[in-house]
Length: 391
Image (tube, rainbow, N blue to C red; front, side):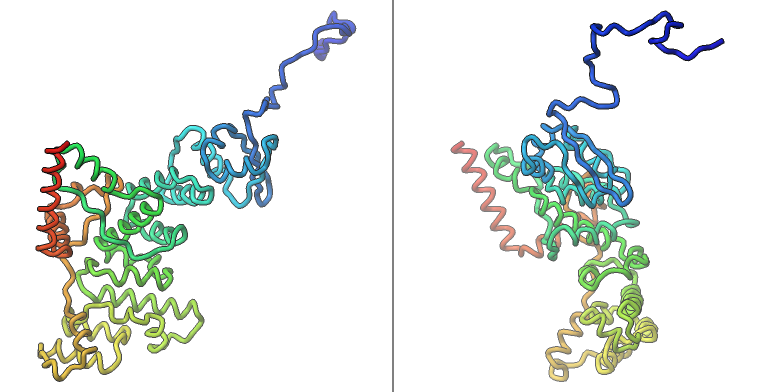
């Protein structure tokens, strides 16, 4: 017969346990020892709460919001409450602070980690997330990244990408002076650079991006920044007109107003003048007008007359506003967009066609002006020579 295991039964040859025997000194296995080296974060969830243990020294050395939470709660407090975060992402964030290593599962996961890094002021992880997003930036999720950037910093129209010298100077002093100003440094500069790269990718694949349903959910400022881009690569301006037509219809539905022509034009505002109407054929223009009347009758008549007969009214017959309007509608789009800001392996200039790199250089020279560019290069060369002589 099998008997139950019992050390204190006489059947097992035990007898009573000696009262003066040695007592166990090791802590139980299910209760990890905490001699002040660990800190516990209590993550509050909708249905359950979770405890996340972390190395106290690593958290304090991180100089993040979690470190401020520890110092603000007192040196002896080892439990801290965290609200409004995903448990798995919070664990990943804590392990990054301990090991300086993180593995991203997808662009959406990278954006979630960027949100945590921004919330807890981890500047190193912010920059790391931006580089990861840039390296994997793709047409399929560029709008997701683009929209997310609006929630982290005040968005302004990005400036031109930073210039990079064509040749590295042999002078050590010249190298030191230019090494620290060749790219972004702070997280805010990285955010602006990633925004510029998102817009640059949209320029290159405008027709594919404009066909996505996510374009119709953009807020007006987000749509405006894209639609006003000069370097949108479009086979025809009818693609842009079609986007404006669909977006204005969706906006009227969101606002619960009657989608009349006037209400749709009011929703678009100045974006009605974004298409380059005079680069279209008369047939394309008429087909676009059947979808939506973006221009008022006088403006449509003016564009239609020019497209039909190619007439060029004298300046005396056009008001200054009409002259500016005609010049805007006639302006051709460039053959290539500008190059992105080099933030990762994807956005390096060598990964783009030679014609595109050459067009970017010509656009840069045109922006600087011939005299200004030559003088600047001459002045820099002279400074480099004198610096090398007296070094």
